[in-house]
Image (tube, rainbow, N blue to C red; front, side):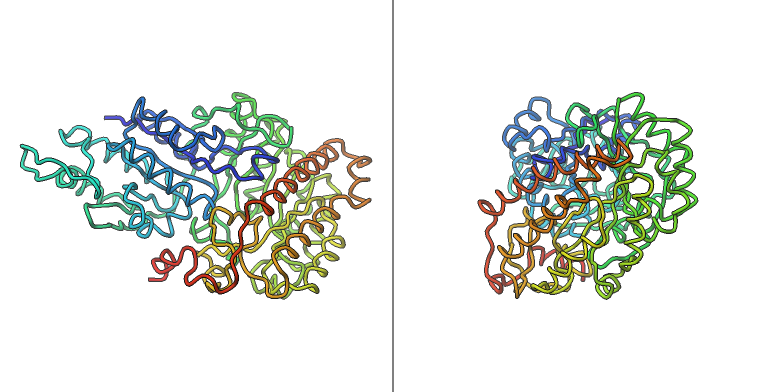
Length: 529
């Protein structure tokens, strides 16, 4: 029996999306949608981040045709988690018989804590979800055949006795689901008052077996940088590096990739069937395997898709692939994002990154020779910031001379090695919805939040308005390259203005030492148990 399933992105509305970048498709849910459709279920994708409905309206819209399951997923990690939790509570009030499932990075690391904190949620899907959701949906669809399959027990609601030998709806649900749910690997679920943690599911070995559900996307909501319709895609999952501030390498467990042929074919579908013009690749490390990357790029070139591709690589891999960079350019790679993180080699080594400054400098130079824009991420807070460190970073980014600078702050996610080292008395931003990388979270003893914020914004502004950057934008030899730089400058200007508004009117810091426990402290206990 098939299910009615809603894949839901809650309304988060990050400032950078609203006022600059535009919205990106909820790629994780799209990857789940294809396998669920192929398994025979009726699937809808609702991206409420784009629609912007408040939770009450969302619940009313769904109540007109109540689904059997709602799977809540988001890409905002810690910052989006409080919104997802509140959305689940409102949906439960309006849809008492609907199974509410929650997946993503945050709930994967904190499944028991999330279920304890929010009785509205029935099941947590841990880790990558394609195989898990197909199996879970199969189990839930079987329960629909039982006369009690649609009954829902809720800890805050009582149910009248029934005539079929069950004292309550809760007992009926356990009889229908209990044995089967215990067999689904990769979930944590509510069994009456007990929270059950099933064994983990092994990483998917063959990513080709699950297709993205592109047909579920309302494409009109997605464009980036004025290049036209935008989509995300993923060639690989995982990362061979183990950077201390990042948890993606542990979430995906190991680096794997689609076959180059499958990857290129999906890009062809996006370009020719759906009119996509720009694709951002959600890989943590696109070219971890040089030969696999080379073959994928060659397959793309063969199809002559005319796509603008944006991908993530390490500076070390850019240097390694110096002889392949003309191939990257022919395949449509317009922009490569590199996590430089710090311009201090000792700091780079401490966070377990593989790009000392000279390697980063060479990578930027190589990309410029090919007309590929280099965007570098620099993280403030990897070391104790003071006037000297921010001045060194200011001089260093000018010397490094990338095309785009993305200045971010260390964000102590509880599941990362760096996050576990942060103490409660160091946190000055307790509002988790502002843990977006673009807001300061950790106290800097030698710089007030105002001073650090103004320093970071001034660095970004002066960097992007420096004379050599403006000359490249106007006189660069590659017209496409010039267009990309102009687009980034326009978007960056709007984002900075929005962030200044947010900082002045919405950011509220607490004094260091005000918090007795870290946001996510309960989740951290679960992780280290």
